[in-house]
Image 1 (cartoon, one colour):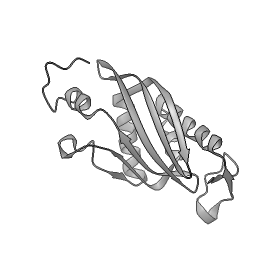
Image 2 (cartoon, helix red, strand yellow):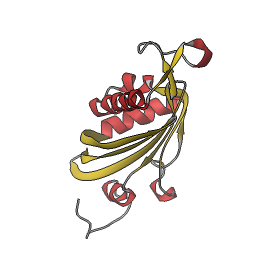
Image 3 (tube, helix red, strand yellow):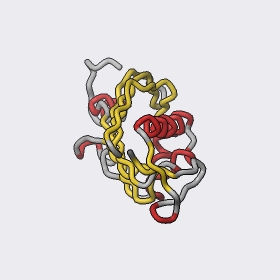
Image 4 (cartoon, one colour):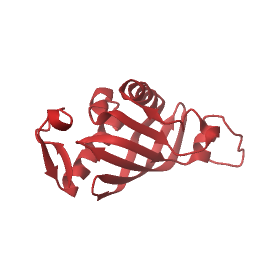
Length: 161
């Protein structure tokens, strides 16, 4: 069970709001709403699910920086999420599975993604940790070689998208 705002429209944190314990299915529903906001490009809705001190990072080494640099705090998250929404079209990405263990959700997604004029098939895995009904940390695992090729960080002529 995880603490979420009792009233779905409520945005209070910690002691400011009234929180109810929710089931795995309810947390899965919350995860689905988060990714629906991302898929639809609804930045305000997406931000409403993130804690003010949320940490977001893509797993990878320094060669993919700044993509792999941790993003912390509401202002930085808003800028980063705006860039991701504007640059990476995820409308054709679907859920493969969502597993919940306590306050952690493991989310496996796959499908067609578009970055600029480049469309490609991909898979993504997210580890989302919740606190007081908001995402406290999101660690995203992506195909880093594919991303590096798309961002022109490496040359891989034999790689097909």
